[in-house]
Amino acid sequence: MRRMREEPRPMERAGEGTPFVIRRMTREDLPAVMELEKASFRNPWSFELLQRELNHDWSVIFLLEEPLPEGGRRLLGISIFWIVHDEVHVLNVATAPEHRRRGVGRRLMEATLAEGQARKCCLATLEVRRSNEPAIQLYKSFGFRQVGVRPNYYVGEGEAPEDAIVMVLDF
Ligand SMILES: CC(C)(COP(=O)(O)OP(=O)(O)OC[C@H]1O[C@@H](n2cnc3c(N)ncnc32)[C@H](O)[C@@H]1OP(=O)(O)O)[C@@H](O)C(=O)NCCC(=O)NCCS
Image (cartoon, rainbow, N blue to C red):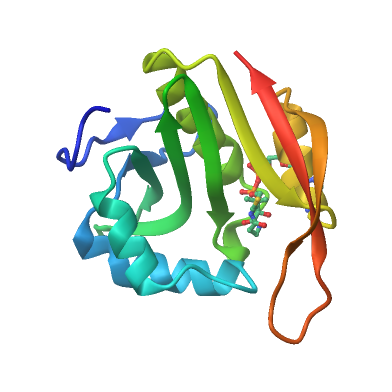
């Protein structure tokens, strides 16, 4: 395991117009990330869970931000993944609802997979709700393929359980 709590690492993503910036999350980002989680998921990660994640050597959290004309940056998206041995496990990718279909999810996945490749991983895995067509299409566009199903994997209060589709990408 490597690289614990390193300094934020801005990564200017070249091309395609929008000057998105991708960097690693820090403790100071927790409130903004919580907002994004709540806006994006029926069962968002809790503050405590996110906080714990920041301490895990194997966990990486990328934030994608957009510079604002008046200065500062706005958080548009997040990607949380683990690097365990030679595998990237994508846990969470989300774009703020009002900024979807602008290429944020794609940039985050590119950065996630590039980090995995830089760390000598040879495959990426993830689970996604069977009904989550936007995410499934995003993953397929990177070459992820379905390798299995976890029946009733997502169980939320007051909602019917839902299967997870297990997807894999070989680098
Ligand atoms: C899935 C999600 C991250 C996509 O983010 P996004 O920033 O809108 O995605 P992008 O604009 O980068 O789109 C990239 C590709 O994803 C796919 N896609 C995104 N939204 C889509 C939609 N509504 N329907 C079908 N395909 C979609 C397309 O293949 C798209 O490529 P294209 O624009 O060339 O057609 C976003 O919808 C989201 O945050 N959903 C809620 C959280 C979530 O469910 N995350 C996944 C958990 S496993």
